[in-house]
Amino acid sequence: MQGTTRWQTFGALVGASLVVVCLTAWPFAKAHLQAMAVMREVGGQPVPWVARGLTVPVTTEDFSFPIEGAGGPQQVRARMYRPEGMPDAPAMVIFHGVHHLGIDEPRLMGFAAAMASCGIRVLTPELPGIKDYHVSQDSVQTIGESANWFAAQTGGPVGVMGLSFSGGLALVAAADPMYHAGFRFVIAVGSQDSMSRVSEYYLTGRDVRPDGSVEVLAAHEYGPLVLEYEHLEDFIPAQDLEAVRAVLRAHLYEDSKAEATASLGLNEVQKRETLELMDATLPATRAKIAAMVARHVEELPGLSPRGRLEALGTPVYLLHGEADNIIPSAETLWMAQELRPEDLQAVLVSPVLSHIDLEATPGAMDEWRLVHFFALVMRTAETTGG
Image 1 (spheres, rainbow, N blue to C red):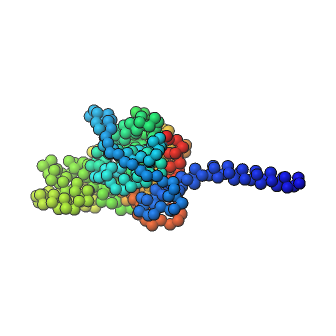
Image 2 (image 1 turned 30 degrees about the vertical axis):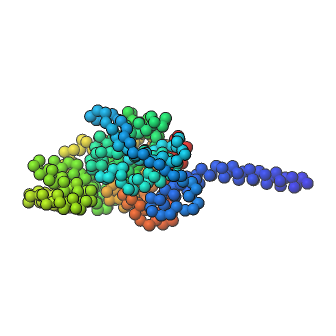
Image 3 (image 1 turned 45 degrees about the horizontal axis):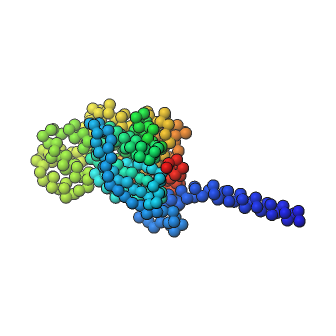
């Protein structure tokens, strides 16, 4: 009888232990299933049946909210994604990258909706400068003011995700005492650490990693074109600006019809100027880009997290595509080195991503690493926000 009683006691203890383990493990398992659902939805793949019960319908609302801009009060266009039945869901702001569609860019909309379906209130404010291919201090201010506005609405600091150059600018804003309190954590995806180093990469196709090795990767034409478009007055005479800008804008917007129409209005000099700007491999064009960067060198630190991260005091998640040829992945390695261990929550350089797109067909381990990264993000959002 005593032996039977001991085994019954042991069985009860084991059963109780299993219950504790399951209850403890479930939040992490849930976060991974939600992250898998997000990745599959964004990639246009069916959500595994085991994760379907963890998603909810999403409602969206377009509106504007007031902030204090560089020139005084202004309205920021935005879209809110709300998980139905969860009015106090954790809050996150997602800032779009350099793209003319801004918050209407389909990939951003799909990602924001997928995150919201997993129980996150998502705000996507529009950055007018970034939308028109200008990486500037105005966007840093809008990012910081937007985080503060949403924090005031939700009763506490919010998670912030920045895509492409917006990720670096979000870190700059988070380091500013005016905005720091509004940031619960920052996720930078495919982002710059040093604008000077990225500008040099566009000229050389080389970016030095923190360990001294060199990342060699031909830069996408998009990068140099953004620099040229932003500072077009440094490249061509004033009388040619509007005509050439129209062609470059249409080219960046990937609007071939508008580009062809705008090109018809160019005179011979403007045609030559445009062709030179379109080809950053030409020695003359590279020399002009280098001269432009030198003229604006004092502006670049204000758009760079570099030098601000050691004392940031905000949890940071870093994600980058291994073959990113717009902002090289070496930039994320620099940020990871500069952040204090207590601030750096996770860092992943993934072959699954290009710049901010899911491009490659993932292997099992690569997919798992990406899912795990977003599971950590979602777990943080759920346990620290509300």
